[in-house]
Image (cartoon, rainbow, N blue to C red):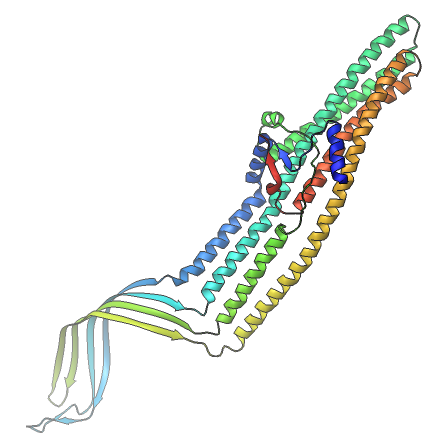
Length: 460
């Protein structure tokens, strides 16, 4: 109810309020350019692409692998043959008695294609791919934090640019009023109705305004350079950007359910659960299928075997021995029954990793809940400060008008008149600074609730 009353108060004082972060199309374009240029976001996006490729590589293990091989070989060797003595049946003449040396040479040609596929991996491939998918999702949520920072920075930069523009306008208005007072004082001095002291005090105030103008212009140049560096927009585009500096009123009930850190850790928890299933799958056998086709040929083979009993050498020749087609089809099972506790240690390690993520998730939920409540308190404080700043500016404006009239009537001195002029500058600038502070506090509340982009509305 208090927030609604404050919102009504702000409207009555001429300030439009938004229940969302209302931005212009120009500012939305600048934010988009900054998101595109940000190096950290680009690198995080590349990291997501790497994780996705890694996941696809794991799933690709289910795809059959086809290998082709070919071989040509020429062999030449010397060998020793020792056979039991063989007597010829008719003559009874002994053959192959004792040890004999022989030589052989041949040509071998081989070619084949083999296909292999994993049929069952104990769930290691599937769970490994799921773990990487969840890790990818969690990394994407964490990337949103950097996007939030970029969005907040760009909105804040244009808020400050608006502040400096307002400061320069206030200086212009003050100079105009002081110049009129100076002309009136000059005339009064010439008529003997005023003293040079009044003129010098006005001149001193004018010089102070000139100093403030130089400071504002320098800050404005530096801020434009910063925006250019962040967005690659030209100075002309930056200055033409339509941006309204208005308080942001939060009327919705917000929670941390959509907080990026929480959703990221929930994804990382799922990834750890799949990683644990993957390690447990190593206890199961791996089943694969294979198929092959090959061609093999032995040709132009020569073997020389000396027969000492006959005092001669036997020449054995083989023109060709070809095996074609050779088909092979089968299923293979590999089961590692004992690995020296290596698999057990990996399973225990995965369990510890899961427990760590669960602990971090619980702690993060408490932390972000506390952060949201803290930001809400700060937001409510700044909302009251805006209400007060608007009233102070109104009072300063009225006082300045009264002081101007009283000075002309001689009811107050020049110091009091210039004090009222300084007050209007100070309070008007304070109102803008307070609005910026309130906007930052509101943006922090939205940021503590999730993605800032979900709360941004583009002005038509």
